[in-house]
Length: 406
Image (tube, rainbow, N blue to C red):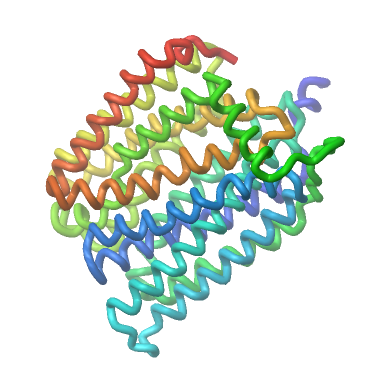
């Protein structure tokens, strides 16, 4: 009985999960709609430019955001970020209204401006959210909480991708954005109901630059954290296929907006399957080795996606890549929570965001460039092959990673 009580998740955690679900659902819908909209207003290269436009401000503000989060109430940072993201969703919806009759160039310019703003917002929202988990749940329930957090993220991500395409087809782009805004209202309300999370007390506050430097020094000197972050950064940078999906869906697989939405959700469906399995049957040993093998599998299935010419095989390849990614996500998340001191959680989460979350946007830009140079399908195969090369490099450069157990 004592063990069950120790592992119980507090009521506050479910407000956190409600906020995460609604926010992720809304943001994933927006991401799906933006990629689809930009591709049809321009081309795959401009989809890559949109990714870079979100990546740059996220990187430039991330470390200050980490310092700010560590020295302020994390709950206020999170709820304020969600409200600002809500404003961006409304802005995208208004820009897309046929009433204003904006030219393609004007619409893309407005979209890029809003996407730039969401990059700044995400640099605060993601680290604030990730750094709160350990403050909400007891240590012996941490792995369970991380699995719930990952699975809720993936459920929302799957639903957001799929319904993004569905609402484009049924309601139009502008109305789809308004629906996303409604979800962000729910996320904001849930976040407001989380208890205050004041900063860890320190006798003397360091200057901002010194504080930021401490975060980088911790990651650089902790070879486990450095290896995990480097592995994910380069694997996602090369292996991410998001920017290619609209073009492949339309020109190779010949499907519609709904088919595009489900194809966009395929990786998250696979990841959810693996996370749910791990929630019921947690990995007990050799987690580091399994993480490396999972990332290698991710690259192999991306290669299969690049070679496929039929919808079901493309969907299956992305889903299997997602299963591998889900395994890696749970292991990486647990390692990050266990190895990071409380006083550095905001800054380390920000570094994670720079090198992991933002690698999706930078990878999107890399996809746009390689598709222009090589062509779309060769670029996908190249990306998957490079992900496998990254695993080999990590195996040789960080040999202790394969021995990690917790």
